[in-house]
Length: 519
Image (cartoon, rainbow, N blue to C red):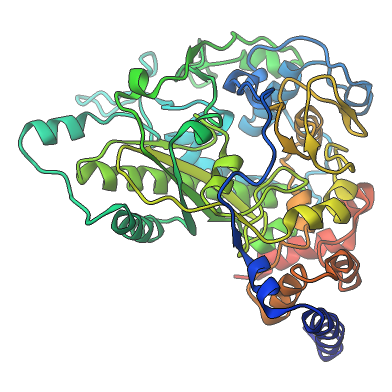
C-alpha cells in the first residue's frame, strides 16, 4: 500500500467507523460483534422435509437426463441436462474432454495453471475420491502391484477405504481387548482438548454442534453408495478403470452415465453407532489465488483445501478412535455443511450460500466429523451478515453465471421463481435463505472450463489480517455497513464487477502475475 492509498483508507474508513462508534452505545456494539443465539438464526418451517444427496447438483450429473427448464442455460452455455453439465466438467477436469474456450497461452489458463490445480486436487482425487460430489465413506480405486515382478496389475482394479473411511473396527477391537476409553472431566473439558487437537492436526477453525433433533434435519435423507454404480473401461495405457460415466463417449460430446444407488440415512445401521456430537472444521483458502478467479489458479486454492480437509479429517477421526471413541469423517457428503457450521458457531449464512466467518469471511471450505464422544457444543452467532447481505448484492452483480439472486432472504418454497430462475430440485426448501441456482452455477463452471469463486473473491468480508482490512471488518458492525461495498470498490478490492470485463481485465492478469510472483 503506497502513501496515498494509506491516507485514503486511514482517513475515510477511520472517520466513518469512528462516527459510527460514537453514535452507538458500548453495550449494544459489543453484543453485535458476535451475539450468541439459542436457536438456529434463520427460519425453518414445517415444509422442510430434508434433502437427498442424490439431488446435489454434482450428483445429478450421474443420473438426471431431464432437460433444463431454463432457457438461459441452454442458450448461453449450450448445455441441455444436468448429466451433460456435470460430465462435461468432470471430463474437462480429468482430461477426457479437450479444453477449447480459453487460449492455452492466456494467463491463468495455461498448462502450468491447470497443472497447479490438478496437483492441488491430487490428495483428494487419489485418496478421498467422490466426497466432493457428496459420496460418503467413499472407496478409492487402485491397482495391486505384483510382488514377484513389481508391475502394476492392470486388469485387476480393487476398491479400498479412503481418507473419509467410516471403519471403526479398531475401536471395537481396542475396547474388547481391555483398553479403556480416555475419560474427560466433563463435556467442556472434552471440547477444549478436541478443539486443540483439531487445530494442531490441520483445521483453521473448529466448532462443535450437538447431534440432536434440530441438527438431524441437516443430514441428507439418502446417502449415495460408496461406489456410485461404476462400469469398467480399459484406458489407452491398458489400465482397467471403473468410471461412473463413459469417458470415451464424453470425449466425443456424448454423455452416458449409470445412475446412482442410495441407502436411507442411518448412522447406526451404516456406521454402527449413534453420534452425540458433530465437530465442524473450516479451512482457509489462499487469498492471493482467489484474486485470480475464475481461473484454474483459484480452483487450485479450493482444491488444496479439499485435499487438506480430507487429510485433517482422517487424522482427527483417528485421534478420536485411538481414545476409544467412534468417528465418521465427512467432506461434502453425509450432511449439508453450511447450516452445521452455523449451528457450531463458525459464522453466518450469506447471499452466495457460503458460510461467512468472522476471521476469513467466505474464503473457507468445510468438513465435519460425527462422533459418539459427548462434547460441549457451541452456539450459533450473528454479527450482522444477514443485514449486510440484504443491501450489498455485490456477489449477485459479479456472478458470471447469473446464479445468485438479488432479492432478500426468505423461506424458499417449491415453485418459487427469482431473477435467477426457478427453484430447482437441487435446492433445499422450507428454509430461510437467499436463492442460488446451482444449475446455472455449475453450467458456468463447465462453460468456463474451470471452477469459479468470483462471489467469494468480491465479497467485502473477504479480507486478510492487515490493519486496514480490520477497519473494514469493524465497519460491517456499524450503521454505516451499507457504505462498505462502495468503499470496497473505491479502493479496488475484488476487481471488476462486470463478468465479461473481469475475464479480460488487467486486474485478472495482474492477479495471476502477483500469485506466481509471490514465492
